[in-house]
Image (cartoon, rainbow, N blue to C red):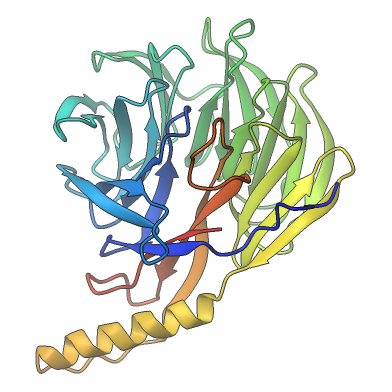
Length: 352
């Protein structure tokens, strides 16, 4: 299946965070808004525009976390955002007021991933403390998966299956495994092995039948969740930082160290291989940092910052008058360096 008339091109760039952008989320109804999280300890609510001079406007900033915000998801009604932070907390945010509606305290270390159940009644979180916690929306931890059959290393990603007939949670870990959990009793249903490096990301297909995982080894593995077995693999070519299924096509999108790859899963062929000019962004970040340092009569020496695509979101239009007539992806480059991130680091959101 080719791209046909839906050739993806860079639509624009949005800037607002002052440190690494870590995650991006959008309402299910595909309204012209997105929410992003960052290592600047904040979330930003953006309004996407059709203006050629500005792809989006930051309309609200959410602050309260005391450390990096690592993940963000939205409730299915688009009224609330749920964030995960290295301050070991989750926060539920009211998108209309900008206030924290609830705090979730219980993890012993950084929280790396969060997710809402399809009915918004349950929340699941994953942490560097090697545990998975199941919460209600009142901030009460109802169950903790730890020890025994749990992961033996950091739990990097956790997702609910949208299949209400078979309540399931899927998790990925730095122990190189993907685990499938029965949500009704929080018991292990299957341990999926095949990766040779840590797992960064897991994603469940819209019908709940498939799971895709990716990470350090640069290989994407497709799993049958019903049978608990691997179906096949896709070569991404470099570390996979994020995955997402198209909501209306049999496509899988991956954010790697160098760009975005889109596969047609029926033919297992690459539909598009989008390259982002990360070198240019890296040079802009270095120049901007230099200007800031010079303004303070200081000179900073350090290795050139390297950029990579850290998160990815596929948005399909559901009605006329939306931002684009064709499906589009949103990719966020993340800046990293050996001497750490700073407040003058360049961080961008790119629309393709």
